[in-house]
View 1: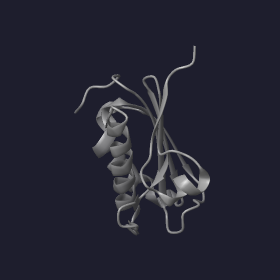
View 2: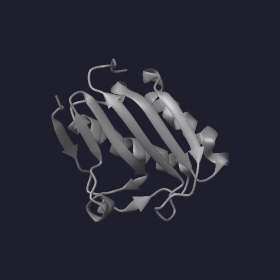
View 3: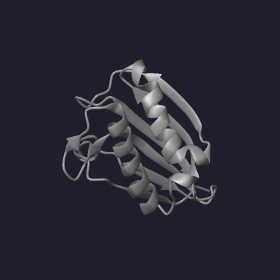
View 4: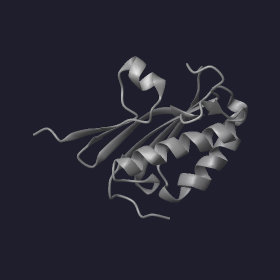
Length: 133
C-alpha cells in the first residue's frame, strides 16, 4: 500500500522552472531536494562556503519544520562542493547545526548549476526518529 505524499515549497524559482518540490514527505520519510545557499526571500547568496552552507541549512530546516520534522530527524546528508578546499569549513557548519543527529554523510566535489554556488546540501529525514538538541 502506497504512503500519503505531501509537498513543501520554498519559493525558489528553480522549483517552478523544473517542476519539483523543496521537500517531499511520504509517511514519516522526508526527502529534501538539493539546496544551495541562496536566501530565497532576498535572492542574496554569501560568497564564502560557510555562509552558503548556513543559509542552505536554514532553508532545509524551514522545509523540515513545515513537514512536521526538524534537523534532529535528519538521517542522511549529501554535500556537493565546487572546491575541495571548502570541506573543513562546511564540515564545521554541518557539525555545529546537525552533528548531534549523527546522520550518514557523503561529500563530493562537483560543478553546481546555480552561478556562484559553492555548496549544495540534500537531506533525508525520518519524522520522529531523532531527539531535538
